[in-house]
Length: 212
View 1 (cartoon, one colour):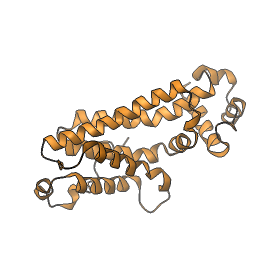
View 2 (cartoon, rainbow, N blue to C red; view 1 turned 120 degrees about the vertical axis):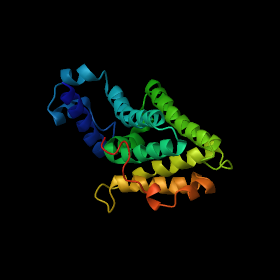
View 3 (spheres, one colour; view 1 turned 45 degrees about the vertical axis):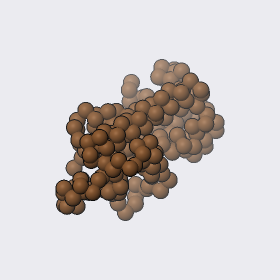
View 4 (tube, helix red, strand yellow; view 1 turned 90 degrees about the horizontal axis):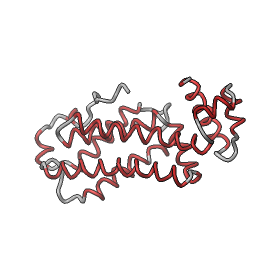
């Protein structure tokens, strides 16, 4: 039955991308995926809830990965690398979900919008916290206000959805490593930069979440 739920979600993504949220009916969704209305309502109370689930899927993913990074690594630099890497990868893993999010998020009901906002704020606070920890540990530059540095990071990575193409020249993991390289060069103190002159420190390909 879980397979049916995924088919319904995938069909809705295909249709929402082509016709927009209001241009698609539940009848069209179930016809597209070969389901019944009963099957649809077994998993979703409404089309509104379906839109929420689409939004929630990738936000939950990056939040879970951020929490996992904080639990797995001790050093703030390693935590930030893992968070950024998984954050960038989400634009490949959930490309259609994110497209629908940016196109149709204004149609979220207030209750669902609040739930999404809560998780987005938690993810944002995770990043601020890691930056502060990095500054306290002497790894990150103290002259960078954590909130501004964190919002700059979020803005840069979020823009990936506008230009990333799976058929592009570079795979998503290499793009993620480039982002890590840029961010670490901006955040690390000169002392931390000089500790390891090996460029592979900044362009590591082996990350904890690469195989997810």
